[in-house]
Length: 512
Ligand code: FAD
Ligand code: DLZ
Ligand code: SF4
Image 1 (cartoon, rainbow, N blue to C red):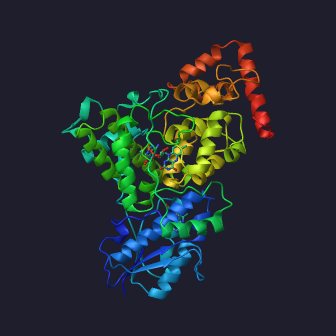
Image 2: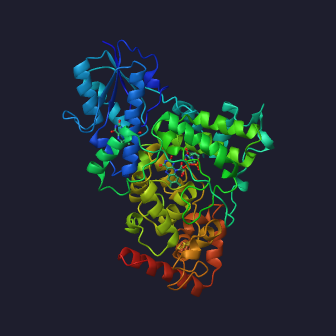
Image 3: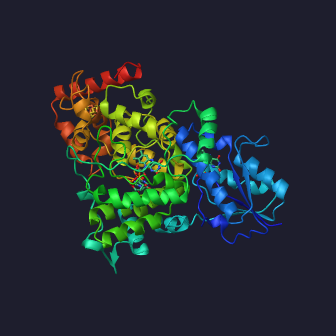
């Protein structure tokens, strides 16, 4: 009779397009916990718990509205454990006239979805994901004919379209972008408000037991699970951010500190990405705080730029360039991911801090992801496939549409300069400027050569040297290439030797 409406684990949104025009008398919503989605990469157990718990809470909320939900649990006996298998099984049982879905966040799932019609023998309608500000066809139209794409221009269009921080046609404060004011170092002794923790309810506790039993051997700690799993709690996380952390978000957006996993960040990516929080609403709330005089412009503009700028932009890039994007390796990087990305066992204090924190919380903030684990991977020439997989596994907010352009594009510069016009390569000096990690490190950030030197320093110059010909023509990289080429031969030799020794020791599994 009615329609079978499929809701995926990251689509726990009341206003989801697949649920538009739902007829509770005739339609059924299908939600399925399946092994295939829990293991296509070995996700952090906190990510699996987050998604499954959000699904169970969302199903309950639908039922409370009188919607019929066919909910398949991971431990149901008949579970085929693939999305397609569950769609086919539900279609055979319910004999719907149509299947309605919302486009997924990963290419591999879209490919699968395109086969549902043949597999189930029922017409499948795939609708736009209207939770994003920019439709994919609009992004394609924007990109068409442009020789190169820049986030900044896309972002300005999104500002104009949403009216966020606009006065008519002009940006609030007279400038579009206050990024230059987001680079302060954290003063010692500053009081950082602890983010809220959401204690597991009975539903989440059931899920935690299930995840511990089935996926307890994946990388990551399950205990201390405290992510929001309902729209209500996601709203509370946002409230807490707006009132307690947003005012300082701008100044210290790029800062890092030992023992501080979250600083003034919002912690809303997990909620945005699985549908518990609406991105435009988050931006409007931040704007209201600015208009009320409760938060400065550099903080609010920076926050809004991340969401209607970067978040929408990388999604557009992903769908514009997939499936080719997933295989790009523009800098020919082939080195194996070292074990310390999993164990945290390294003498490099910055990497140890970020890996340990990621294992505990399935979270690291942007500069940790970009300038510590990402920068190291870039400089050491780690294989993008392995780095991509690591980022997909370890973070609770990871879905390919957002993870891949950030990793392969922004961090590794492997995507033929689609996301960024220059690599975010930096030596230890950058990490030392933005954090206190170096003070507690076995290596000396001021040395570049010899066994006690911070590895980032020699690796940085080795990276510039390896790619000097490639980068010489890039105006934004010409400076370091020139500096390298003018360097005394003995100094060059010592740097490259230090880099080679370090990498050889790392590859051999020695303690580095
Ligand atoms: P805040 O710093 O408070 O920022 C607010 C929001 O802006 C975030 O919740 C997020 O939705 C958005 N945002 C900020 N930066 C970006 C960005 N570069 N791209 C897209 N959205 C952004 N983000 C993910 O959501 N999932 C990922 O899998 C992911 N992988 C990343 C991998 C690498 C190598 C890098 C460098 C960045 C990655 N990011 C990813 C982007 C960013 O690091 C996270 O969105 C952010 O750290 C989430 O924490 P928060 O909610 O506290 O963010
Ligand atoms: C990430 C995830 C996990 C862990 N489990 C499920 C699941 O059991 N059922 C489901 O429908 N979705 C799950 N997801 C989310 C999907 O993998 C997600 O829809 C794709 O990554 C596309 O964005
Ligand atoms: Fe990281 Fe180098 Fe600083 Fe150690 S000295 S914390 S390796 S940047």
